[in-house]
Image (tube, rainbow, N blue to C red):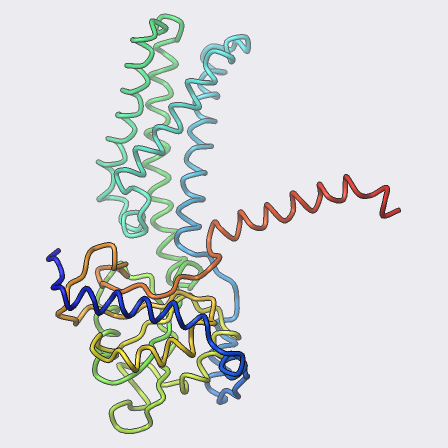
Length: 345
């Protein structure tokens, strides 16, 4: 990617600095931002339709990695049991099985075998999948050779685990690809987004998103303060659900993951006015940069499919962070109860 011009880089840095200063609003401004606004009937209906919790793609891919590790581990131990039938050798085989399963998942992660588009098209990923599995076994064989421990392990077990593991991974990927298409069609696995600001740029943004076959974004609607012909009631087939103050109430009712601001980067004042109202929401806030002629450093961007987005705010607790927080709360709650129950009695 081209390096940005000096002025362009200063513009984005100044924007982010001003965005950080939004958090120091006065109490009156905060109370105005938190004041509830009545939604129209149609917006309430849409919010109620998308109130249900769903799985995020990053959570699902993490579960797929864990599932592969556990299944490959179980296959290695099962082959050990059926071929050798000696539980006394388990202490020797268990570290190798654990290491081999972990290495295979690591190599598949490096080969991008856990990306949602790759999981949806298993035929294109068979080569990378088999290559990662072969590399894991090559690493195990090389380690055992240098440790002079190869003679302690059964070659029949090694070959049986290799064949059964490869067969499992291929069959699992085809079943997973079918399941992902079904889940994406039914809205179980998706990211829900709202477009902020209508008009021509929002129309181009929506059409660009919908033209990508591997897109996991579901657009719920458009919110815009403008009521003139620049922002019609229907934009690229999606209704305008209300104004920006109504968007705050909409996000509190519906499960929204992302707000995408469809404004040019030159409209800095208007972008800051929007962020001043929207920063209180626990969602990812992005500025669409697909039509911008300015080019910033790659770290400034995230991508929705192949579309570039400038990151402004990130959701504070999301995906595995929420799982870690929940585990932390449960663990220390139980620990506190165990330590303090005599006092409480």
